[in-house]
Length: 403
Image: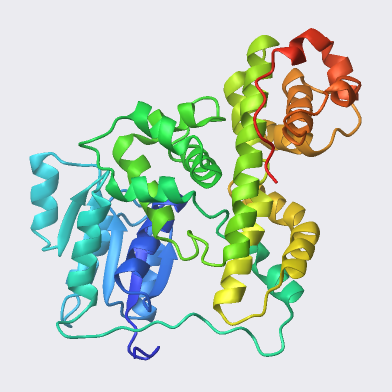
């Protein structure tokens, strides 16, 4: 069994937080006990190397301050055995490659890199022939209650689990057998992927012009290969697939409710001349908090914590709103999108956009049983402000309500 004293230190230096998170996930997949140090600039990377000799450095050439090539040059001056070094770069021209190879990096990988191939290289470097690495699930703090666990995990929660069908498809996809249109159709039903790809596309080094507020806007910004890499990273995360039967059943309910709300929101937006893509996205993401709580409850259960249906219901009621707010803030989703998501749950006071009113009506409709009359929704504040007539609801496609 691997112990912390044997666990390799891996330094990851990349300015983009989403690429850094992807690299961390790939390292954890290659070697689950790796002690990862993540930094966003070259000076911090150099300081980290001087404090603690890493077993591997993965650095982007375009780091601010001391760039990745200079970091490699300085590490190669060390008289000790050279540190394995993966240099990432968007530069593929002959002069750049020659300049890098003169310093003998362990690997020179052009961005966007192939995540599967990088994973293979990581295993070669981080696991010795015949070495076995066993990483048990972290134990719960002694005497910690479920509420305390959920409070502690909220600000670091990874978000929602992935739809199993999407997770399986991501593992099969490559840039040779799909295009951006196919990714949009596949990923556009999964709240976790949709939210993370929008957030990644809006990160500072990628943002050009207006902020992305839909998957259709985010995918071209990220590009095919990077979108696939990020999706693969999400699929590799622990608890991306729920193992507890009751949690999986609850997640299916919230996935169905999210999709139903998204479909209603898009349908209404088209007929009321509003932004259909934004409304669809807000509907798909409005249950992120519930799904994130379920995923964290799965971690609690796998770590040995007791879990009953009553506890699950109580945890969702108490923690879903705060988990959703924490994720939307940490992922820096656009303010307009956060407002639309909030409108799906409740209209406050003040002036409302057309899309916010549509979201409120769509969420009300999504909770109705398939054959239930829509009169109560028609009389709601949002429907009246939109001027919706009963004839419009008569045309609404009705599907089975999630139980």
